[in-house]
Length: 501
Image (cartoon, rainbow, N blue to C red):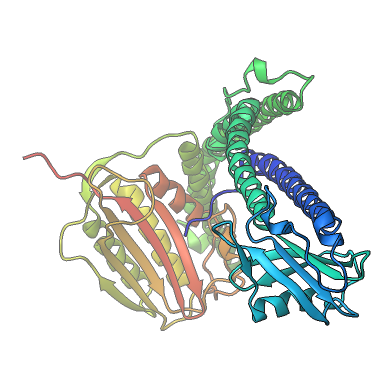
């Protein structure tokens, strides 16, 4: 069962309908109670009138009956009961009369059981106090007993059918009317609340549209604004709308400043990298030139030249990496041609196996051609970085596996072909430190905390950042999952659409 969202509109409508319903219930209960008590009081007044009727009070203790029977009087209700006794209490003595008006309007004698029920009802009550009793074959009757001036005890009873029927009729009618009224109130409240909340919905829609923009991807302009009619400072919604507009202006200014700062930084890195290439090439050239005559150099000089050459080479590599990152950040796309990812993967695998023979290498390549649209050199750089990291940051004897396959249904941006190419590099090393893993693709981040670094292998901390930038420039993704004994880097690339016949 789907749970309905508890929106503000729904809560307001439910609250209004709930308040009206509670008020209607309170009024209904009060009205029905007052009516019932009023009708019961009138019924008790009728009992009192019957007890004081001349044809009841005129009977004497000798048992002489009046010529007029009270039940024969016009206007008597059906099931009206008259009992007259000679005795000391309302529940004992000689019965002079015990009759009632039956359903045909004639006078009938009470049965022994019926008489007992009536007498038991009034036996413990005070004289003149009404009681309610359910008499067999007659129904619920309101009875009252009292002594006459002649000393005879009289008991009279009047049916409560009309009282109950009138009360139930009012309850049913009121319930129907209240239900219709509550339904109308609910419909009206829903329409009214919807109208009043329409400006708030427009403000919320503006916020939703802004939240769906890829602001983290470098988008600076935020054209969305709350409409002017919803920014009236005299209303609560207007204040929210005006505040949101001011916030959007501030965010847009901040994004613009950030983008300008990043653009300057990218330009600085690109210019600095470009300018450093020439002096670094000169340093390497002079070092190589001096090393051509080793016999003229001392051992210390030869060692210094070797270190100068090594450092200049590493510095040149770092400059090239920074320049490549700056170009990718600036939106410069790699060359896109149709190529077989399997061929690129096999070439990188063979190079890594030769370069690091102390590791156990395994290739699990897809039998079919895995065609993608991309730059062969750039993709080779990605796989080369991943394989080199797997070898450099793990101990000798670690098994490294390169696998290629199709990956239909993978997450990420879709292509017309609907298929993906998956390239994975898996190693059985010690794994990546959990604190480092979330930042592994950041620039100058090194995963040396828990993965053993081979001696002499320099790392700039840019390899994975460059790899991710290249893969994203191809419309794919690069992810990592690691635990002790199992680390896997997964590259997803859109498969090339089928070639036209």
